[in-house]
Length: 137
Image (cartoon, rainbow, N blue to C red; front, side, top):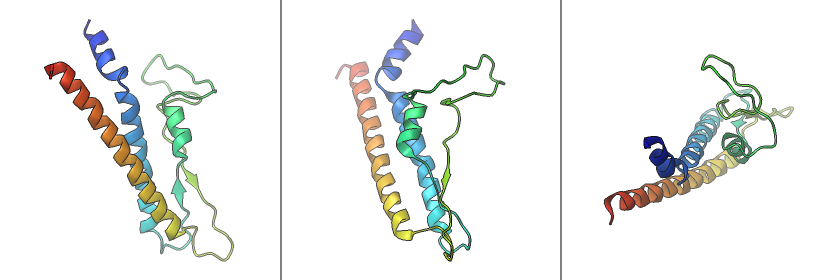
């Protein structure tokens, strides 16, 4: 009985997807802020993730097969949601100091901040709705 209630309250309302969305946004924020921090580091390669592709993989919106683990010690196979995001490193062009374009990185940071804010507001509204249902107000 308890599992059905929890399933309805959280899974059916989309809270796990929003949590994955916010987690992925936080990972991207760390990568982009690391790029900005290393803008004067010689030979540094920018790091980023394909946000939409990773979110689709984490929420199982893919066409590829993933192995099922029957023991926590097993290694996940294929396009599994427990696998960390694939980090993309940009190559350094010949003659360049590093692969960082500070304007692109600041733009990515602003875009990611906006995406995170939207995800956080959606999560807040979901919990406000749950609170209203629980308290009958």
